[in-house]
Length: 100
Image 1 (tube, rainbow, N blue to C red):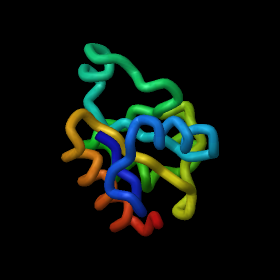
Image 2 (cartoon, helix red, strand yellow):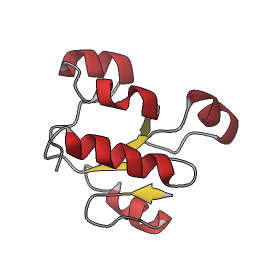
Image 3 (tube, one colour):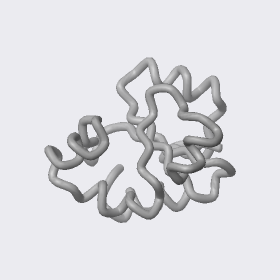
């Protein structure tokens, strides 16, 4: 299940269309879940427990850790997890840190 600021839920097709733009897709599942169930192409895995810290990192450190350019507070970001609960929490965390 997927979460985005404007639309609480996205379909898989909507996500695929968004990925053609410069949206950053953050998968907040645990690493073992990625290993077991597979990585979503062009997503970056930041487990929910690391997210608040990750979104406050120095951009260089973020790039080093996650091999991805750190999003700015106005960049489009999509969160996903397995069932939708953690992605909603992730969205709340990001918004509380000033992401629009």
